[in-house]
Every structure is written in C-alpha cells, then in structure tokens.
Length: 208
Ligand SMILES: Nc1ncnc2c1ncn2[C@@H]1O[C@H](COP(=O)(O)OP(=O)(O)O)[C@@H](O)[C@H]1O
Ligand SMILES: Nc1ncnc2c1ncn2[C@H]1C[C@H](O)[C@@H](COP(=O)(O)OP(=O)(O)O)O1
Ligand SMILES: [Mg+2]
Image (cartoon, rainbow, N blue to C red):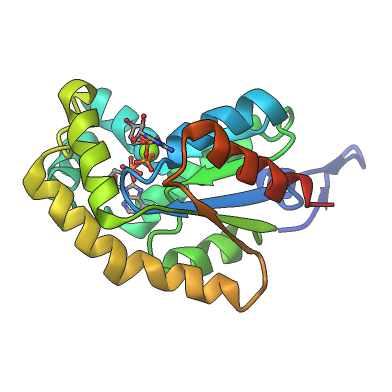
C-alpha cells in the first residue's frame, strides 16, 4: 500500500509503509538450538527488536482468550499453528515497534517455506538468515534440561520428539530456500554461548 493524500493535503503513511524498509533478520534453527539465547545477546549489543513467534503465541495463551486455548492445544502437540495467526501477530508487533526499531530479529519464523513466502508478500525481504545449528541429541538434551524449569507445555520428551521431526521435515527446507539467495549464515551452536555469539556478531557486522 502506498501513501495517500488526506483532505488537508498531508501525506498519510499506512501501517505497511512503516515497516516496508525495515532491516529484517530471520533466526532459524531446531527447537532448543539456542535461538532465544543468541537473540537476547544481539538485543544487548545491537539494540535490535527481538520478536519470537513462540513468545508471541505464549503471550496469547497466557491472556486466557478463546484463541489462546486453541493455540495451546496445537503447541502442546508440537504442531504448527495456522500461518495467518502467527504472521498477523508478528506484523502487528513490528508495526508497534517500527518507529523506534533499528532492526528486527524474527525468531522461530519461518517454520516452513510457505511462511517465508507469505512474510515477504505482506512485510518484506530478510537481509540475513542466521541458521542456528546443533545436533539432534544436543537439542533434546537442552530441551529436557530447559523443561525442568521452563513450565512450557511442549518441553517434554514426547512433544520434543515431534517438534524435532517437524523441524527436519518442514523447517530445514527453509534454509535451502534462502541459501540460493546467498543470505544464510550457518552458526555452529554446539560451542559455548559466548563463542556462538562471536560468530553471530560477525555475521551481523558483515551487513552493510
Ligand atoms: N551454546 C549453548 N551451549 C549450551 N547450552 C545452550 C547453548 N545455547 C542455548 N543453550 C541452552 O539450551 C536451551 C535452549 O535454548 P533456547 O535459546 O531457549 O533455544 P530455542 O529458542 O532455539 O528453543 C536453554 O536452556 C539454553 O540455556
Ligand atoms: N512460525 C510459527 N508457525 C507456526 N507455529 C509456530 C511458529 N512459531 C512457533 N510456533 C508454535 C509451534 C511451536 O512448536 C511452539 C513453540 O515455538 P518456539 O517457542 O519458537 O520454540 P523453540 O524456541 O523451542 O524453537 O509454538
Ligand atoms: Mg525460543
């Protein structure tokens, strides 16, 4: 949507215009790979806005809304919630921060190629995809440990297995899709957190 002239002749910007030139970084990786951990550190160093699709969905669940109840049931099974729901939430959150944001870390999205395509139609293109990579057994170990304190309904053995299967099936193709564009930086997340962050920071510093 472009600008439109109001009665007074002023140019009125639509909400879409507010985010159309935003700097967008997708953060993709398996469950428990360390996406959230690295995003927190990026926020501290670069002041970017961190939007985790999972956090946005969990906030909706916590609100107690009818929609939240439906979402909770899906997440508990380790499945993906409907694309439109999550994309609308991300877009609204981006618009709300557009005036103050230096850039957006979109964590946990896209989970499938179609999500990436729809994001680009409705919002814009990413300049970087951080691929946070850890071995399956590492992710399971981290999630089981996180589950001791996270209170998350999906941090249990059965759901973790389903989330991992879905990651390999639906999300890994996202990485191949963006690799052909040359914007993927693969980050070894088996290393200690600060070393992983060193590589993340190098990738971000490489942006113009
Ligand atoms: N590089 C790392 N080394 C060891 N543990 C890590 C590392 N990165 C993350 N963790 C731990 O693994 C768990 C999952 O990390 P998190 O950032 O929540 O992953 P994600 O958002 O990808 O699911 C957390 O308990 C976190 O402390
Ligand atoms: N982009 C997305 N599309 C559909 N469902 C999503 C989604 N992002 C998150 N969800 C739902 C399904 C996930 O299993 C659940 C938890 O997501 P998450 O918090 O991003 O997990 P993690 O950080 O462990 O990778 O929320
Ligand atoms: Mg996370």
